[in-house]
Structures are given as structure tokens and as C-alpha cells.
Length: 291
Image 1: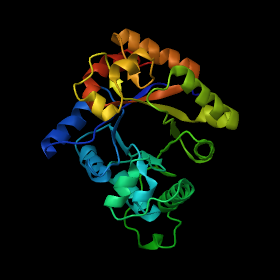
Image 2: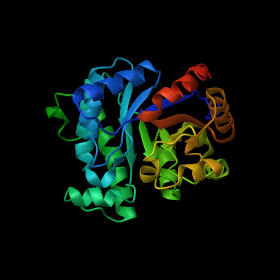
Image 3: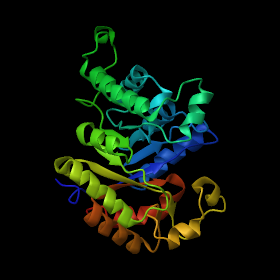
Image 4: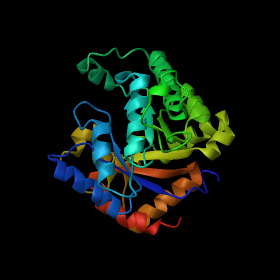
């Protein structure tokens, strides 16, 4: 299967809830709407991802769960491996591991946790060590494995998603990942996305066909919430007028056609949206269910 032939998947990203009841309701609602995955960001101002995702997995049946994405400086490789094997076991093998070297403002989270943020090279090295630790834990090949009472369900391990756009991250994704989200700036157009996927194809054509390519859509519809400018860090209207790939507008049929065209051109088939837009995206999921 090539990227262009891969069926669409949709992930809903949720970050907060005022109560356990509200969080449970969110998880069950996105599952009922046809989303494949519930995702949590990794920021110290929102729900801690492993705890929140474990709670979501406990009240759903088919919904997969994963962080989008863990910042490598915020946890040791061994900690990520431990948490991953636990969540994989508790979810019945519905866990997907999203990893990144840390967005720029993750430095603030590192400071809040009393951890060093490190240089870009150090963070990527820790990311590589984290992948190795997770794989060793699932394989039972690390020296302490004889003491483990918890084993992962998925073998040889959970699907791994990497986030990044630099050459080193693209090479690492080609070698180690199952999924890649291209963390382009919000103002990026489809031409920018195509240029980046062409770059990936140039690095490793076989990996380009193998990887599930992911796009995070930050805004759905033309009527942005009043607070959208603050969390987007940009004017929603300008993003829409500029043809930003972080926006998805039009009727459900028009949105579906946009995603079909984009998949044909770039190979992107896994679409992540904020859970606040889940109901607006549900008709699109239905239109693309068999495509």
C-alpha cells in the first residue's frame, strides 16, 4: 500500500475537561462520531496525557489513544517505555505513541518541571533513545525485563508517530516511524506541504510509501470561535484567505474533496482536528469512510 492508496483516518485532539464525567463524555462522543483516535497534547497546562488517555480507553471499545506528541525532554526514555507498555496493556492494544523533539514553547514546560531542555541535537538524541527504550521494553530485551509483570499487547510494539520537518527528523521518521506529522507553520499552503512531502520522497521513496502521513487541522469552518486568534497565534480569516492547510472550510462535500485532492497530491491520509470541531467533521468522516 502506498500513501496515496491508504484509507483516511481521523483523530480528535482534546486537552482539558472540567471533570472526569466531561472527559468520559468527550471520549465516548468522538468514538460514536467515527473518529479512529483520541489524542492528547503534551503541555503542562492541560491534562497529563498518559493518565487522561488511560481513562478514555477504559470507557471506549474501539477508539485508539495516543499523545500528540510527547516532548522528548520532559521524560526519560525509560519512563516513556514504562508508561507506554502500561497504557498499551490497559487499552487492550489500542495505544499509539506520538513523539517529538519538543516544540519551541516546550522549553517553558521543561523549566516548570525542573528539567533541562537541551539543544536540538540533544533533544533528537533523546528521542532516538526513547524509541529504542520503548522497543526494548515491548520486546522484553532490556536487562530488567525478568522483573516485569506487565507486557505490551501490540507486538513488536505500538505504532510510532514522529513530528517534525527538519532533514534529520525526516530521516529518522523514514528509518524508525510508522507515521509522520509534518509540523509546518500555520500559514503553510498545499504547495508548501507538497514540497515537504516531495523532500521526504527524495530522502527515502520506500519510506514515503510506507509512512502514514498526518496533518493537524487547527480550524474547521469559516466561523472561528471568538478566542481562536489567541490559541492559533494568527488571524483565522487571514489563514483561510491565504489557503492555509491548517484550515478546512466549505460544505462537508467540499471538505471531503479537499482532503481527497490533498491525499492524491501529497499522500496525507490521517487528519487530526481539535475535538471542539468533532461534530462539524463527522459528516466528512462519513463521506470518506470507504475511501
